[in-house]
Amino acid sequence: MKKDEAIQVLIEYVRANEAGLYRIAYSYVKDEETALDMVQDAIEKAIKKIHTLKYKEYVKTWFYRILVNRCMDNLKRKSVRQEICLEDYLINEEDKEYIDIYRSIDKLKPKFRTVIVLRYFENMKLEEIAQITDTNVSTVKTRLYKALKDLKTELM
Image (cartoon, rainbow, N blue to C red; front, side, top):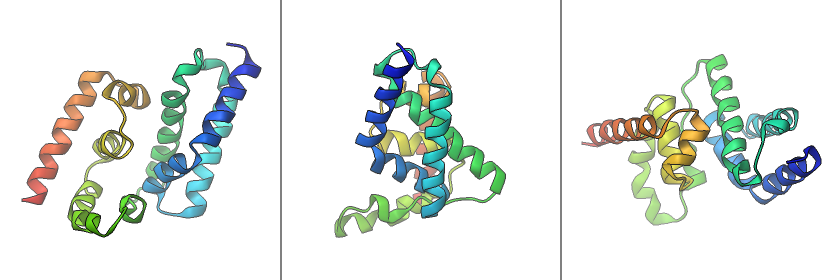
């Protein structure tokens, strides 16, 4: 894919998914400005690395990987546990009964939390999560199983 075409694909993807990208960033950093900075930094990095995007079909997983890695780097620098932003995922009053689940998800290690958020909140396939987290599918399955087991223990 040519550079100009790849940049256009990236621009279209970001514009079409800006709310979801912001929501993912915010779920990590818990601050509006920082979340916007994370998305902006991810866009800048994506433009610099646009030559690594070989097929437009992979723009979603390619960009999510950049964004999640950027957010994880930010967390490592801060060394602060972040909570999942409940308001971003609470759609209606009935969802408020799930607050304990959200709080339990927050207690997971980042690598387990990432798999849970991408799988259940962003409805991604295991293969997509594997690409985003730069792991193989069996590792994603293992992390998902471990995260679910930890959540079950936490909620009992």
